[in-house]
Image (cartoon, rainbow, N blue to C red; front, side, top):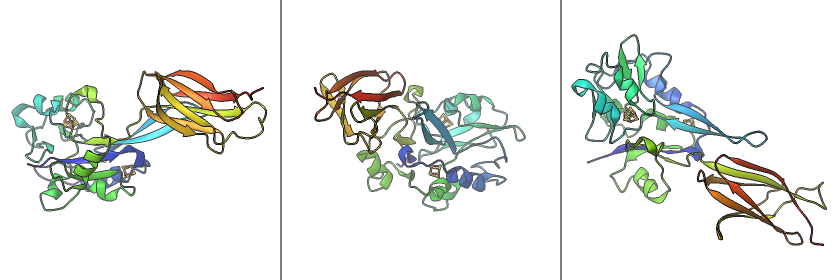
Length: 280
Ligand code: SF4
Ligand code: SF4
């Protein structure tokens, strides 16, 4: 058995959209028979680069989450389709049959990831096929992976322990996008955007200079969960934090009174300037 999939590293994605364009180039106007009908010029994003804004001015963040069909093992699109119009191949790829799916708009609405698009002209639901038509001819990867300049996309067989995707999946902290959908997607992620805490340290007796090298510790209870130092601008950052958690941020520099600040991650947090007072 094989389970073909993508591993998507959000931390490597620059939002260049090459993956989307390669997909468009492959599928726009091209009929691949039982794999896929021609993609229309507008309105379909089989590889959609979703922009996720976090935080706020003056320290916002922008992440890019490339999102194809996630080829779910428990796929609502298969469940809702009549006449076997959506099916999972033995290699794990979920395919919409362009002949059987005609007129079945319910397939569009069944996908919680909104990765199925309606082709009004053909009256057909359409989505990413993981380039199955190429793989079946012996090609080794997908068009989006070929086009990605940063290595943010890795294609392969999760069940082949020698494959790069299987080894990365075993080694990295791999995540499911929207696990609350409960669809068991084969496509997995690294570095999905979560909460962050940022701040800036200023020394009361030296406010004209940036406070570089100040020790910052993130605590949960008495346990230090992350440590960093302020950079040459006096700034620091903790990213990849869980939502809705309570933390303490400890700020320490020799010769100054240490500070502890309580922080909750219901939202991203900018602590703003933190002024350290010198010991008297
Ligand atoms: S992401 Fe959506 S279209 Fe793709 S398999 Fe899952 S439910 Fe179906
Ligand atoms: S090609 Fe790679 S870096 Fe560019 S948007 Fe797609 S995944 Fe991100």
